[in-house]
Image (cartoon, rainbow, N blue to C red; front, side):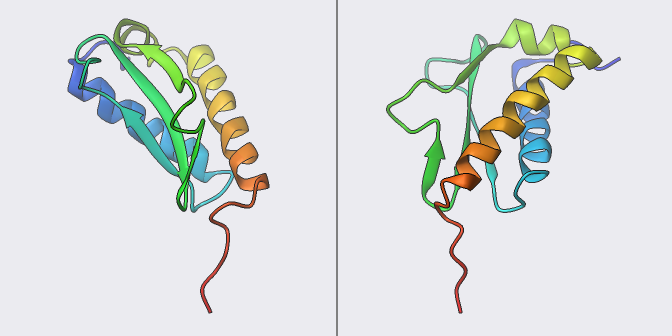
Length: 105
């Protein structure tokens, strides 16, 4: 179905996927997919941003996914459901922390 693709195409798919599922928990949450700079063609790191806060924070390990894993499984509904669950749980944690949730007057 959607399996395969080059590194950049898979990165775009992953960014859209993570963003879509994170925003189901909080529309202000943004996806941060680390690609390139030592990861090119090998892996991705996934974090979420709410305001200035990152989760997992900068010093912590992001959700690590290999390029092969994402390219091979992005058409697998069970794999996608599991990743969506991880992303949504991360978004809930970030939202509960209340960081970045302040509204301007």
